[in-house]
Length: 362
Image 1 (cartoon, rainbow, N blue to C red):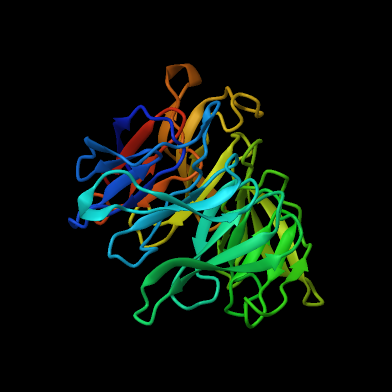
Image 2 (cartoon, one colour):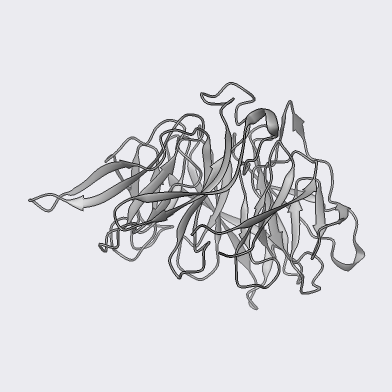
């Protein structure tokens, strides 16, 4: 039986990214999206963060990643976008309230989206923007002797060529270290990720518009991590099974998950139904290219896919005809237990507004 969800409108704002964290240190989760944050637990009180650059139907804000960047005890966040050509952070003003000042970390070129992964295994995430036309670079927050953020960053170039659209991170090699996945292969991590040489293995082609992220997970439980990838600007959602041939060489077998929907741009791997096993949670990014992608005017959906031992079973969270009002997940959606029920709710930003889907269980 699929999980039941209750859809609640939060805002008509059309930012495509949302983060969930405790903004004001009151112990209650809040929602941060674009130029505003929404105070929990009901998200009806709206606070201004500051202006966000607009570009047609877009805003230059393709991620909302919380971290106490300056070590003052309040969570700030990272963002970046296609038009600003920069990775940035916005400072939480704390108890004083008011605008969130913005600081440029680096001029990066166009950012498709940004992700946070613990690249060096020290327990703290690094920031990794997907810059399709530029190098793959990891930004590591500098900390003081007490382990608090200083607001400064070290830059580590992982791959000198254009990385392409799409980015993932996880242990492909089985070494226990995290490797990077590009749309044209994977980069094997050296023993020291910041001083060693990363090796490109051009084992596959995932498409020019691969999702951000590309997931690295052991789908079938055989001890080898596989790859799950959506087409962010075309039809298709697939998983690539990692295997070995007779000679022991690594192989990749493509298995379709859902070839009938387009614009699967953001993916998450989490236990949405509470059975102790993760599901693939995703949905269509409404108007990803403002009406110019294949399948743009098809029906809308937010879904999770449950592994049944042989393939993925599709379960609907929300569905709508395009003319009835779209339901999508934007470019950076969230899963969080907003009500402390033990169940993950879904926070969906997008060009159709900001919504919360409360997980009501089976």
